[in-house]
Amino acid sequence: MIRDRAGEAARNGVRRSGSRARAALSHLADRIIDIAPRIPVRDLATLRRQFPGLGPEELADKLVAGAAHGTSTIGAGIGAAAMLPVPPAMPTELAAEITGVAAVELKLIAELHEVYGVRPPGHLRTRSTVYLSSWSGERGIDVTRPSTVDSALGGQMKRRLRQQIMKRMVRDLPNLMPFLVGAAVGAVVNRRDTRRLAARVRSDLRKIQVPWDELPALPPLETPKAPLPMDEAPGKPGSGDGDPGRPPH
Image (cartoon, rainbow, N blue to C red; front, side, top):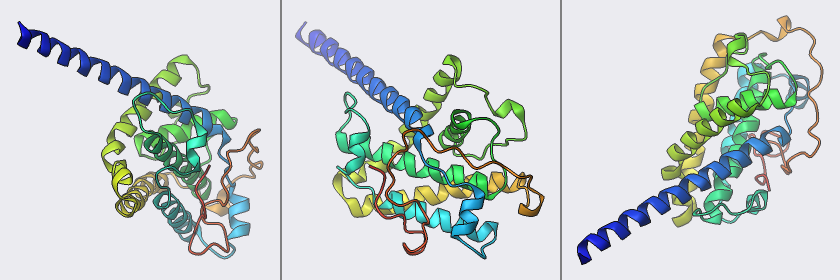
């Protein structure tokens, strides 16, 4: 009898913990969806002015180096914690880590689409949805296929996107845990993972790349109404080999 009660209590505890963990991941996914349109993105014209004389691959290399440096320097308890309330059943440090890394990598993905001449059609929120899909799936998005670009972030699309982001975060959790026990290890892991993500996205974008001299005139990218503070954009000139300075906060 006592053993049965203990077993039932243990099962209930596991169910409650699982429920809290899912709630935490769902909260974080929604937060990442909310901040994506606020991430400032440089258009191709701006990037070419900031990096004169570089071709597409050289420019992409600079952006990847800057983003990798940025995610490697995001540690436990950084200012990114101010981005969101603490989700249930998730340490503040880990929540801040996931959100901060997502912001840097989303900016990188958006600017890689610019470099390869495949800006997604539509307004700011639509493009942000495309970049979120690219980030969560760790692949480039073929913007030449209308089926890959959803026209609006409706309820069904948001639920699907939330599920994709949660799966991505579950994959990342084992890699992010070192930040809670050793920042040096976590920095190496984050740098490696950002470079791996970039390599996959670039491989896909090269297949649909539009040469710069064949690009139609595109309007400047919109400035977000409430830009997410990013002290120095990845790859900003004067900050070393793509050194982005401090992470978003």
